Length: 243
Ligand SMILES: *[C@@H]1O[C@H](CO)[C@@H](O)[C@H](O)[C@H]1NC(C)=O
Image 1 (cartoon, rainbow, N blue to C red):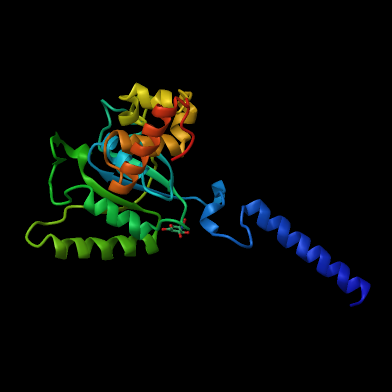
Image 2 (tube, rainbow, N blue to C red):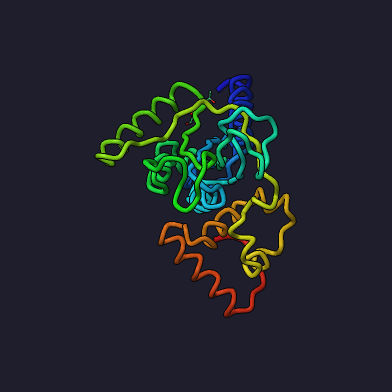
């Protein structure tokens, strides 16, 4: 090899390596073990009844990195809990598309509420509890429509009332409403080191434990976290860092 070619190769390899390490991708090993960058995250928003519960449903799934409750789907500027106007209580889900897909999130969406209920969900009555899949454009709208049709077939007589809407503005709710289920369990908050509010809202671990606190994690995950907590309690080891 000529020196110049060798140098070019060296530079290329270096650039490729550098680029890959920036992205957190290793050449061997499972891709999902490497951390994801903010740019690689994808975001989706669903409305399916009380947002306290919605956040708990999605927070515990593998591949979900962050959850935030808020308001979407209406026109009122700056909605708040007691005056949310025509918005619906919603959950914003940031996820790693290498580990979970929009289609899989849709499946969880359908199985986690009753899309045939009109003007409410369970004990919660009102337009703010309506069912909506928010999308980012044509491809997601298509996937959402296909999956809604499938759900309609499954639900036989009842009409699936879920709306499919292009997402406008998502307004995050006040801190009081974020990780609401987790905050009802001071022991769990303590177990993860009493994180300050800003950290708690961004934490994947808090999102998982929020689902755990509401007993809405998938059964294997619920058991796995139980075991971890019991282990910590037994050893007296103070802080839970991951599950
Ligand atoms: C919309 O979301 C999908 C994931 O469901 C993603 O692949 C796509 O890049 C997004 N499109 C836009 C325009 O953001």
